[in-house]
Length: 92
Image 1 (cartoon, one colour):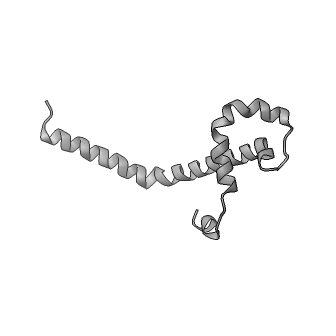
Image 2 (cartoon, helix red, strand yellow):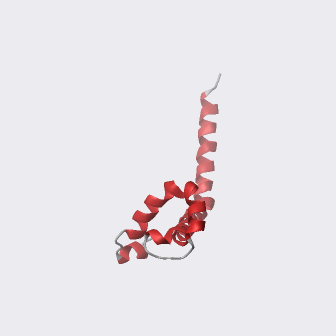
Image 3 (spheres, helix red, strand yellow):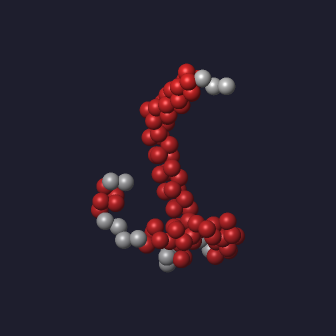
């Protein structure tokens, strides 16, 4: 049986954990996700650059890496071929 003070205490502890996450870990987590996305785009460009007309690696390596990368190719292709404005780079 929970009392009102226990539920308030659990809410307070939850709020404090979220507050500390926001103060300490939120920005590094966002930066890490952006770096991962950039490295993933670079990896796909190196391995499947021929889709965009950039011959980088021989086809043999691309075919070996193709099965696990199939779900990532279409979103990457749209992201790479998207028309960009200077505000995309300034506010990213």
